[in-house]
Image (tube, rainbow, N blue to C red; front, side, top):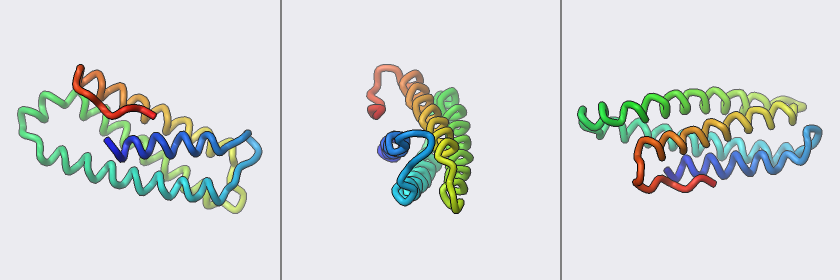
Length: 128
């Protein structure tokens, strides 16, 4: 959960740093994207490790949560690859960066909602 929260925080930071569709501190944006990648890689690593520790029964019981989570992780990775490519351009397009970050934020919110729905009253990490 901590790495998912990190992703949400850094995505929010990225969106907040894009003052308008025409300007941004690109070096700051690049640094945030590096942190997004690091957090995503750790999230994915822990997610896979957690799946390996589940019993067959638990895996079946949680499949309604795991399948959407896997889909969101795949989408986040695709968006992050696009974001990494965009910030490496000699003149990154701020509007495209904002669009990609907004899409990442939407997936992170959906992941949080999926966790809340699947786990019911159990506490799930706070969404920032």
